[in-house]
Image (tube, rainbow, N blue to C red; front, side, top):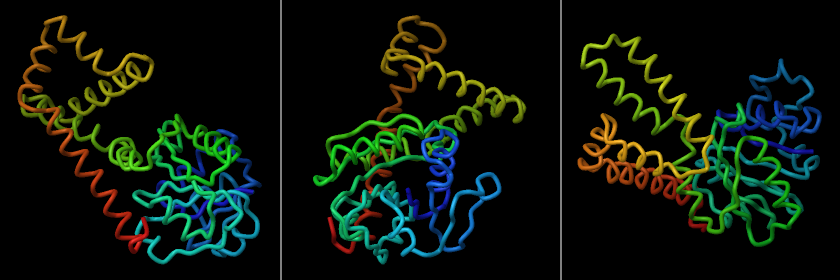
Length: 266
């Protein structure tokens, strides 16, 4: 039995991703939240929903925490012999172990794209996580999209900033392009339609290739056409530095959120 504590946007997306992929059977899932209900109840009536933490503690072998990070300032559970996964921004392995009363903890990051099986969900196991625990994490997170094990816990703050927000920074770049188009006189509805199609095609192209994204950029520059002129102007204006500054601000925010919720536990 698997418990999922917290059914906000991310928790609900993970539950949906598990159920749609078949990674977790509806009858093997318990959701815990304050209301005792969730939006997917009509589609998945066999999923148990409860407000009783003790029920989850007693019934579940694996528990995933998807609470808001601030809630971890007071959250405590009795899960000493369970696998505890977390997708909460900034909450450290040490804090997870302390709050859950157990040593078998794995910290991960995901995104609401999990509902459609499109998330990227890297994870870092704690020192007491077993090989079976790691295999379980790979199976559950892999059902939401792509997953990788990373060797350093701090890297999860990088992914919180970079791949956690969907559409996030990609939407910001798309909005900037749409704003340019409307400033040139393109009707707003047409500009938005064009940019949505561009990003759909670009995402499909990049995800279908094993080459690094920079290879596509370099190929455009080598072609020396209109796109090369635009890329070279953006890079000369410091686009790379601007993006790095934004991502670093997001990474620091994730780190600070964890520190605020931990009460000094790191």
